[in-house]
Amino acid sequence: LWPAGSAGQCADCTNYDCAACSPADGTTCHACRSGWIRPALLDGASVAACPALHFADSSGACAACDAACASCDGHGAESCTSCSAASPSGFEYQLGGRCLPECPAGYAADARKHCLPCDATCATCSAPHDPHNCTACSAAPSAIAPYLHGGACTAFCPAGEYGAPASAVAPGACLRCPAGCAACSNRKACTAC
Image 1 (tube, rainbow, N blue to C red):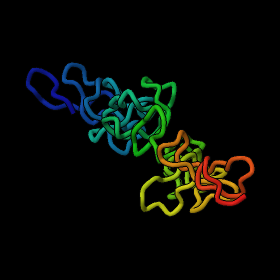
Image 2: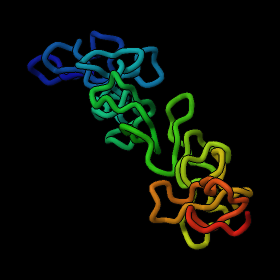
Image 3: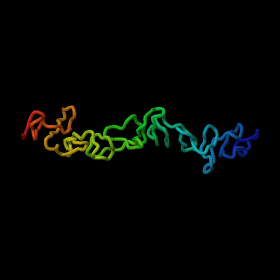
Image 4: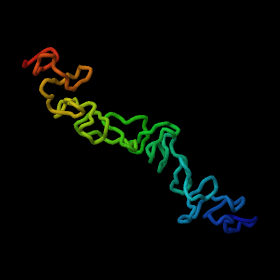
């Protein structure tokens, strides 16, 4: 309905898609019919769905997604439902509704570029939830598998290798003992020949 005429009488909107319309013309929608085939409001018109980079807010009006999102379900950078390198931010990885330039430490991207946690034994990884794709192991004193060997975190390095100290270039990595050592505690100390 809209106020029509100088007497302020209400008249039906001339645009059937409108639940409420502009008093100036009766065709520009201020609200769309809910449950109708065109329930979303975009620039005064009722549309079947909001366009890309928009979402329907609580009033049914199409609102712009945050610039970080390729699609969203609400206001703000925490409401992204998809991310894309083609989005305004160029961020393509998604974690908890946010688009990021890369997954943070402790997470890796799946095929859909969603950041998912690494296996519990990994500090960082190249594939989520996979104990054989660790790129670093936890260095915490409580870590039960602090040594990295062949992409997996282990409690001990195999024979002929030693665990690099935290100060090393590759901390926690299992490194080969020096030539002639069957076992060693570091690169300079053979414990078995």
